[in-house]
Each structure stands twice: as C-alpha cells, then as structure tokens.
Length: 461
Image (cartoon, one colour):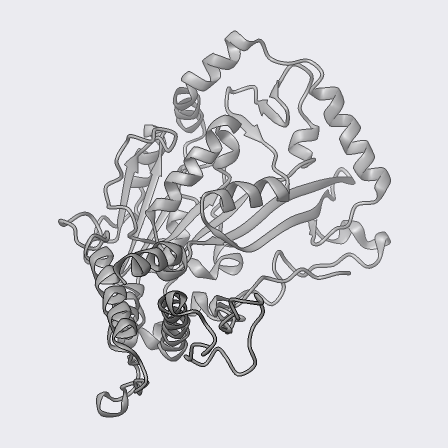
C-alpha cells in the first residue's frame, strides 16, 4: 500500500540565491550575486540593485540565525508521525473482520461511482429556504439542546490527537529549562537583532558578529538602517505589547475552537501538567458545552480558559490579542458552519496566530459514510446537510481545504485524505470513513512582509 507522509521542512523557508541581473539583457551575469553590482549597470539603476542585493544578504543571514537557534520541535524537519493516519493495513480481504478499523484504504472506481450516485440521490430534494434560515439563526440553540441531552457521554476523548498533531504540545520536557530561548517570542527578537546588527544569537558575543563588507556604500548602509528601523517599528506595533489577559504570562498558547464537552481539552490538559508555561484556551458557541468543560474535575483555571464564542461573528473580540497563539485546533467544527461563512472564519483565526504558528484541521471528507446515510430532504445545499436534531454537517474535498486556508494567508504543511474501513464485526457490516486532515502554518514575519519592506527601503533611498 502507498503510505502518505507529511510535508516540507523548515529549510523550505530559505530563499534561492539571487544573481544580479544584467539590466540590458535581462539575464544573470557570471560572477554576480555576491554583493557586487555589475559595472555595466546604468548609474541610475545601481541604487535599486544595491538594495535588492542587500535584501538577499539580509534574508540569508536571518534564516541562518533561525537554523542555528533552538527551534521548537514542532517546526523541525521530520518531527511527525512515521505513518500519519495509522498503520493498520488490510492485505488479506479474508481477514477484514479481525479488527474494527483499517487504515489507508483505496477505493475502487466502482465504489467511488456508487458513493457519488448515492449523494446525487440524497441531495435531489432540498430543505425549504425558510427552514434553512432557521437552522442558521438558531444554530447555537440546537447545539445547546444536543449537549443538554448527551452531556459529555456522546463523544470519546480524542487521545489520538497527540499522535497526529504533536505540534499541539511545546518542546520535549527534557529541554524545558531552555524553553525561554526556544519560544517564538524570543526567536522573533533574535531575528530582529540579526537583521539590525547582523549577528547570530546562538554564538558567543565576542565571536558572534558577522563580518561587514568593507565595500558597502553609504546607500547600502542607509538601506540596512532603514530596514532595521522599519522592522523595529512593526515589532513595537505587534501583539506582544498588550495589557494583561488570561494566559498572558505563558510562552506557548493553544486555542481549541468548538471544544464541545472537552473531549480534546482534557487529553491536552493532562499532557500540559508539567508545562506551566503553556496555556490552553477553548471556546464553543453552545453555552451548555462550555459549562460542561468548566464543571469537569480536571479543569484547571490556572492553565485553561473556557469561554462562549461565536466564531462566525467577526466583530466579537477574543479574550487575548491577535498574533498570540502558537496553535489553533479546528477539529470537526468547520463542517457545522454554513459554507458561505467558512472563509471568513478561517481568515479571522489566521490573525490570531503568531508568525510560524500552526492551524491543525480535521473534518469530514467527501463521501464519508455519514454523508451517504442522509435521507432525501435533509440536504441544505451541495454537500451540506442537516441532521434530525438540527445540527449540520459539510463534507470537504482536499482541494477545498487547500484553497480555503491558503486564501487566509497560511502555508500548507500537510493536507491528506484519510480513508479508512470501519467494520461491525457482530453484524458483519463494512463502512467507508473519509476525513480530511491538514496542517497550515502562518508565514514567518519577514516572508509575509517582504514586498512591503522592499518598497519601503526603496522609498527611503
């Protein structure tokens, strides 16, 4: 069977080495690109080339600093499950009922065609528009009723989370004494210093200074100074200059959106017991669910803040500033939101992440058995359905997930379709499960702002 693997390492952040173009021919000149400007370059265009060359040097030095620094494990190359999405492979069809679940199942063309036909049939009759409006405006009421009936008995604790999403936790407990050096707050400060002073943070001070090119012109020095000033100004405007808020003293912050009764919250809190510098936020727009979390015996207000929040309300503030989260967990939540509002939700969540922060996603995939089981008259719109209790579910494709998160300015690190075969051994029934799982990272500061900085430098030249 073909095994799926996670995606790129941190080294993908390194920009390619840029050669200075010959402005007459439009092609690189041999020997150019080492901080020199071709002698044939027209005088009026030399300042522009100098700035671009200097930018290339700054980029490469800053990335070198990050490579040398102590990076949190969740960003290091190869730090992911050896076999994402499980490793129980069905090789002998005769043994299908020996286990409850089989991983990495490949569908035949006939199976996919049958699933597509089933969806066409159950979506032929749509819910009336008046009723659809009710399900949208009263969504929280339906979920409140759900938790009032089922309390915390319906869903099992998601102990699998840490296997698939090790990024949820800070670095290994053995290196906790060095956490201050490896936190992203500290890392961003060091990166700023590397930009402005051109030295690397992990080397001894007396040997740490990068050698400055003696041939740099006054214009180049001025450009470097302007770059430093711009970066520092943006840094001062950043989210870390804030008043106190719940978890403000933490250096690693997690948010679970749509926490429900706490089936993810408490497995995570259990693993954070020995990490007092970490803090977990969790929210749900069903007040009954939040009350279930707060009343749980394992809830610790010193390390967790549960609150009622509607992620579809863009104007509703969070109890913490933008740009302060290391991880956002979005598991089986987005599917319950109307498709027209999903992009706005993802855009807003993206703003909450620190540069380099991760958004971890898992939800229903197209043709999951849950979608195939819907009867006629439950379809709201294409691939969007309402259950008998008034709660709703959408079924995603990998492409839809990619488009939505990338439009929000996040970089795809993982995007997998998880196809499994679930069996009921007692009834001898086989059911195909389909989920989509992804990891999306907010770009680092200078990659996100690079074009703005280039134009700012040119304007100051």
